[in-house]
Image (cartoon, rainbow, N blue to C red):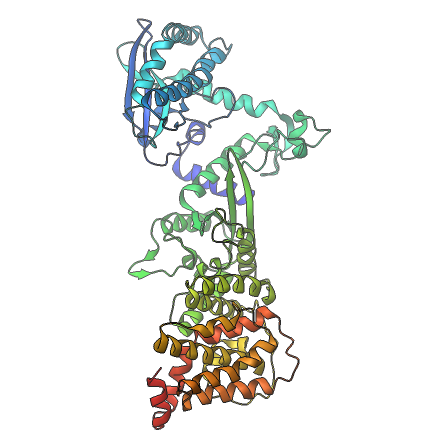
Length: 609
């Protein structure tokens, strides 16, 4: 995966003519726009000249000169993010909160940067003099600077990002720090020093495999790799030996950074509350083919259509490009890296490696087949219905791990136990039934998921041979092996007949008291066997046990009787097929209606429903 990221970074640097500074500079991650707060220092007159506020402009990224924001100590350049504060109970408390935050940022990121670099040997005397004067003005005017920054902050929208930096007047004009060689030099030097802190010489780089003058063990392009915890360090837990774990040369480190930056910008997608990075890896073909594919990916991420053809999606991301990728030949593979940010760190929640375009094609073919059978558009959101929260009142997606495991198996083609899925299907189905919620759509989603997974040959059902053909054969065949036994068909039709009774009771009484007999869809074998006579009796009480209902009841009886006394189905299985019959009643009635147009008794019975 890292080799693939490095190749992307190398291509991006070569194709855009970037230098080291281009790679080092980062963009701030603002939620809703940003503001630059600039402390104006006149170096020529050694004078503080107030605070300047401007909207953050990405075109000025080289002038702002923002690098990584480190948690402890100053950043490589005197620019830092000012964290937003909570609004107090009154204006005084809000101002006090801002004063604390500004003091912290000003002292830790601006003053400490000046103290750290003002006397470095690699600076010229003129550069040292600039920093000396800067330190004098900052120290003398610290209270006034902090107060004026606070006054500006309380006027800004609360959620807007805020960067604090300085602006200098050296001779006749004002300059950003990125306009001055002094600050660019320090940035490059700081990065070199960081690399050299944990390094070795004349060692093979683990990425390019070439022997390099210097390799570093502190090339944490991803924040799930760290050397500040003993478990990550080889060599007696001594940090200076950390390079042994993951030696990376300077060139590869910068290419890795640029590769991740490209992927974050162009190939980062949402996935039902998760986020993944799409990482392509070319298997065969030279630079020309690689450049062509990366250019396609970069362009495809901006629009999900080619010409006038709208591309299909199977996730909740409107910018998803998976179908475009599925049309490519198998000279490339894709990895899906799911990351979760936890404060300043990152955690891998799922890594799906080396997925061929042909596998993506199979997934979309399965989706197409399900869409055609159900008349609806299938996507992973239907699975997410059952693998999000075990309780609707929970704040977190506590079933996210299971959801991602299933997604992993779908992409890799690894079979899934139906009994595992069934547990979560029924958890959600029962919940929706009891709260009078989205019961029908939830059952439909479960059957759609079965169809999708069966199309991909990821789930299977125990079948039965030599079953009598049913008037409802087309419906059973529609759902593949789901109904490949007489017992499942009999339970399904029992559920359909039950729903007909519930509908009848609602028409007659405005309520459905028979619903209580379903035990919240925790029926066992004896319960289902006892339901059919009760249903028939209730229909006869309403003088409504017409020919259509008798046909359904007769088929249900036949299937159940032919299944013997030992059903060998779990309670979840019994109720899954029963709920399916309740939900798919309309399809049962449609088959009866269309197959008996000359039978007025059946037609009349169905019209009364």
